[in-house]
Image (cartoon, rainbow, N blue to C red):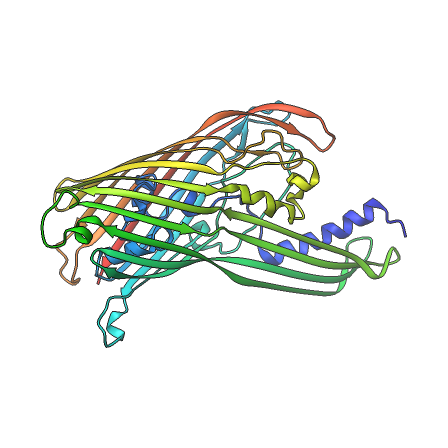
Length: 445
């Protein structure tokens, strides 16, 4: 049977509309996440993630689980993050230069505690978790994957669920080790329905399931002074180094549908199967070091992000395979090195200021990506922040800490060639500006 394109499109639209409604997918997302795109907590935002490997707060479960051991006290943290973005391309065929200006709005909660008291050994074992939900807690699962004629940015969008759980323990003389898992969702949907040509359905059956996928994060932290000269002063006092490894991860959705259209598509109907990934995080290896003085510290890190693995992921994606090597369009990604540098200064016992800078090279190698038309540029990242500690608490055992962070990202200009569905080409220049605001309150126990 030869199917009319109009009827096929109607069936596809029915399947996509029903599954979209069930999965709540009205928002745009892309190949990034809260931790890699901006920073999890205000300290990470303010230092451009340069000191994140040594951050003792609960965001350590993502950046370096071993850092959970740096403060023996328990911790409860709540925070928010708001990102305003203006991503542009000067496309003469579009109604304006702005490709995306949708904000990202997260509410965050995290906790850390010492489970060592559960054992007879008394050896400290720290457990921590942090969770972030988009749209200030109202949106846990949002997903969008599409081709585009007018261009779409690769790394920015919404990341509705951010969840990390991990633990750490001291090993020997200033050496700590930790491990955590990043939780992403693999959603599946199955739809069976009978439809008239007018779009009225009957005998519908829709099943949706979302399973967690666990990806490993490993980290170690070494206080060089405590390790090599624990009983005396030496030139290594104040120096720390850390090494972390994060496996690649991504969210994914698989849709299987079977549509029977009365008097047009008989039983067994039209079968549609779509599998697509989103929010890809590359395999990352990072090494960092910091030096702490009297009321101040300075440090930095180097990250290697292996984005080239995304080419293989695209080859198995029903939507993004237009950009895979197998399709002949040969979209390509490079592995990139990202340098970060930051500092913190304690003004007095109640206030501290910090800042950081990073330069993030774009992993997108090709500038002509038909159908997908991805845009991505190098970016300069600058952050500033302040912490205030209130120690006159009458009811609480420990002081309350308030953190504020601001980050500015300048997306450098880069030329691309957009290819529409008819094969017509348009030369555009992509750039953008991103402003990130973050705040948190931390209680110790």
